[in-house]
Image 1 (cartoon, helix red, strand yellow):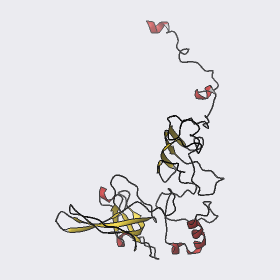
Image 2 (cartoon, rainbow, N blue to C red; image 1 turned 135 degrees about the vertical axis):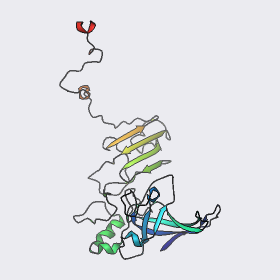
Image 3 (cartoon, rainbow, N blue to C red; image 1 turned 120 degrees about the vertical axis):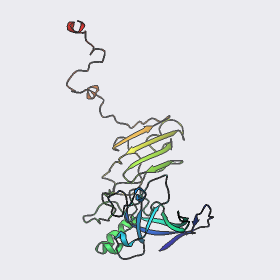
Length: 279
């Protein structure tokens, strides 16, 4: 296995942390009770991994070592064929015996893309080695006539238009795998659509769900939120003015059920009670 990082540590409280991280490939992961290796709720997030240098495709969890998430405060589990770093910790179990546990960190940022960072066993795709090399080089995100289908999970579908967000100075950005993002940013004149008014460093929060698929763009250049074309979004502004915002319709009647009916204000809709209602 490839040792990527070494560091000095101290131990205490019955824990002893080894001084190295090791890179491994995720072969399988437990995400729900239907997994054949599921035991209890503590099994969620457990990965089965292999040496990244192996040339043989191994999919049987029975023959593979396991690792559990290192962090408790964030659930960001890897996809199949992504690379993670693992480390081992010696702990005292209930019988006061030393027990080694393997923990893993979130997936390594191989391709600098939030969608996925998988690195499958290349020998599995021998007939498409040239195409696989091109995708590794980041030449284009345009699908070919014979795209390689890399195993990433049971339901995860690769979408080649998902790009990272373009950062601006001071931004704190959280990116999901599916074009859902949160930007804790600010006015950065004149670099983006929300920085036409106010002063630099005025705060803004942008929550976006669903990245715009620009079919004319086949590059991997990071993009910026598009309020008119993204699936949905929330802009929490301070002194900004979203000047490029296009409303769905400027016709008041478009907001009324049955647009062929004339608009009647709520006050005008009030009627005198019928005589029978007064009895």
